[in-house]
Length: 166
Image 1: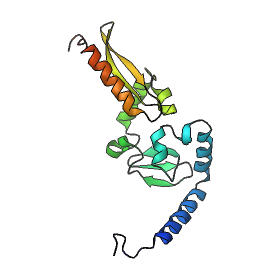
Image 2: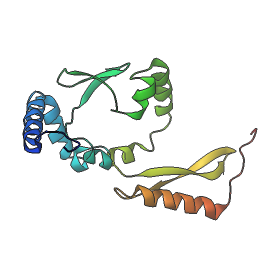
Image 3: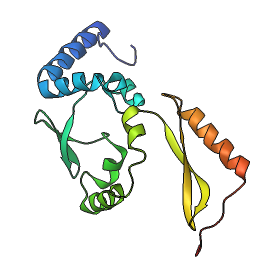
Image 4: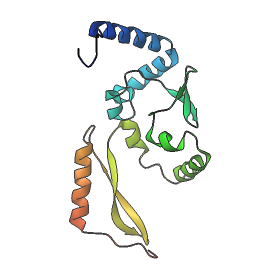
């Protein structure tokens, strides 16, 4: 007996295909959003790694607490739609307020979030006595190279001034 017991792999594949088709057919608005996204983003995903892990895509309309509702009206308990939702829930009022306040001051990473390019920021010194950063952006799926360049930069400059009062 295998680890699958007497399960028939062909039958399992058939059931998976049938249920996948049923899932997609019940979500026409998500399917339309996926088609639209593919016109503007690689694989229709805001980040390239997402295309490798998500076979049954849905577009989220809104979230609250531990769950979210997709654009077709189906509700889900969120086990992994985002790392943050795992420990603080969706639309936590304190987090919403903090993000809203911060977003009003800076949106410099938004283009990279949308295009799926890996990006990281390293300390680059002081500007008018305040910490300044250098953003390093890589090519699609080259997160490791982006991080290696960041590490090499940090090693090359050998430390940064400490901001006043710290």
